[in-house]
Length: 376
Image (cartoon, rainbow, N blue to C red; front, side, top):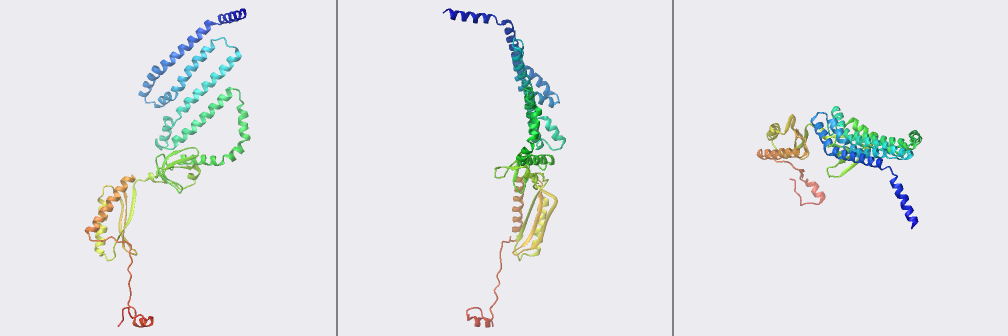
């Protein structure tokens, strides 16, 4: 029993011997900063954002938005750190705490820069507009991913340096293993360089309709290694950038007008005057149509094919939209059918005429056939 009482007395004396004044001040510091954190989140930041949105400097607004969560987190860390500074902590332990604090500061800055370098940031949109690429350019997401990768790598490097890791040794190690890494990642490097070529030459942008020997569809995204294309069957095709960079790319979205070309075949035996009338009426039809571009319209009697007289029709629609283009094409086709009916001209279909000559009498006798037609 006496042993238990002695232990309790020792604990009580140790408890009374604690620097309670400093502990109380440390707790007070933490509570004050924690309260300021809440005030900052609810009031100060909103007021600053309200004034920033009224100003034309959207760069500053984006910066504030990017650093909102990192700053909120840092204020809480700062409260803990200042409270620990006021406590009588041994120097060795305090050295570790200082290293942790500096590492957190580096991470917070990297976190904010990572958010700021998103594809929606005003930073890349300004750069894209200067390149006359537009807000939907593939340059923006590509540069965003590249910048974010560099920020993460730099943040990890600085934190490692704070904890005493030899960065020079790490770089030297990478240099020694560079050849092996290059050989192992040769395909990845080729795709990365292909992506750089695509972004710098800008043969297409996000949302464009492209056609290559490999794929046809709408461009959705480009990354370091590949480009994603949504086909018209609604499947997603991932094409390595190296392949796209070495292929001919047709960008159908760059059309200013859209072509329609077909042949109208009419029956043999149609009078030339009728063909001329049909050609003139179809030509006038196209020139009067509000959705047809009048810069180049060709309606000509082109040739006499195996089973028809062919009228060649060639023109462009003002709209490049696929659905509207098809609607115009349907309207033109139906009107041409009505013109043919009004002019009494029949559309031809593949056919072949067979001519049978009379068999000479001598040949019939030789063949022993007396049932065929007789030549007098």
